[in-house]
Each structure stands twice: as C-alpha cells, then as structure tokens.
Length: 171
Image (cartoon, rainbow, N blue to C red; front, side, top):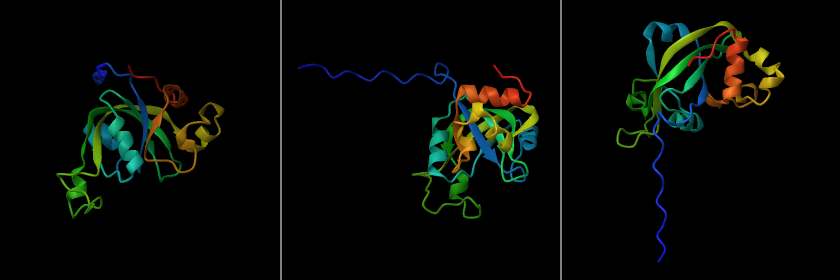
C-alpha cells in the first residue's frame, strides 16, 4: 500500500517571506505619536472577522503602514513592525471594555490582537485622496469601498506609499 506523503513543516517566521499590511486607527483613539512614545503596543479591539484573520496571518518582522482614519484628511502617516504574533485580545473578556464580546470566552477566544512597534514617521502624510489619484495604487485595497481596518498590502504598493510619503524602506 503506498504511503501517504507527510506534510512539510511550516516555515519558521524567520524564514518566511516578509508580508506587508495596512492598519487603521483613529488618531484620537491611538495615534502614531502614541505608538512612538510607547515604543510597542497591542493592536486590540478589532471586531471584524476578516481583519482578525489578517492579524492571524501576520508574522514577527512584517511591516505595517500606520494609517490614520476617520480624520481630515485620512492617510498613511508612518511605519510599524509586527513584534508579537496574534494572541487572544483580553478586551473581549472585560465587560467594562467597549470591545467586550459576551460570545468570546478565554477558553475559546473569538478575537485576537498583535503587538506592533514604532519604526518611522513618514515625512509627509500620504492621503487617501492622493492614493486614489495614483494609477500605481489603483489595485490597493485601501482605495476601494468596503475597506478593512487591517488589510494586506503588496510589497510594491507598500514601497510606493513609503516613497510617496518621503520615507525610506526599513530593512
């Protein structure tokens, strides 16, 4: 009887290709300046399953466009790096938290978060309007309706936004 092939081991985070993301935060709730002051911080309170699944896919070392939303104008303002992979979001278990979810239990968490660290501020905000007007970013998820708070970004789009903002790509 032929042997069933065994699955290859999953590559470790250090060997996996770097991924790129865009994470949105309202600056009055959590801003790039606040991340800079703290150095590292949890990205908690995400309550959308697709955004949660995107955080589950993040690996230590992945780079993030830090995007200020629900402000005038909205746009990419900096770069962060994932420094801790997804783990249960304790705000889901706290009845006093605005992110409380009675269906999420510590032994069966529905919501997770990652930790991010400050990398750099972009010298110039890359506004949503300028992204929409840029043909090279036409396929970027952030310029389309129904945008998620946590979304993947191609390496090319990430680099283009960073350059457009006057920044340099981190190593």
